Image (cartoon, rainbow, N blue to C red; front, side):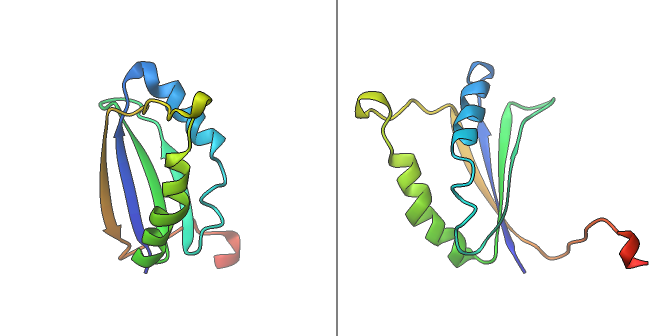
Length: 111
């Protein structure tokens, strides 16, 4: 089954809009990666200042290939004057999971 990678980003309140705009400007860059299955950027509502970046992959090898290729290139890009913009997050932790069970909504066709 698939694997899930969750990047927990600690984002100060004044940087939330910056983070969301940066993700929006990169929309679609992961979509065509071999083995990519799903992406979600989750904004905290209460109890934490951490955003969760959820990605789902066919296997660990697909995730590693993306990390070493397209993701690495995207994070090395320079801003104005060739300087890399200041990170919006003040901390980052990556959690790894294997999908052992899954389900989706039941549709009328399932009856």
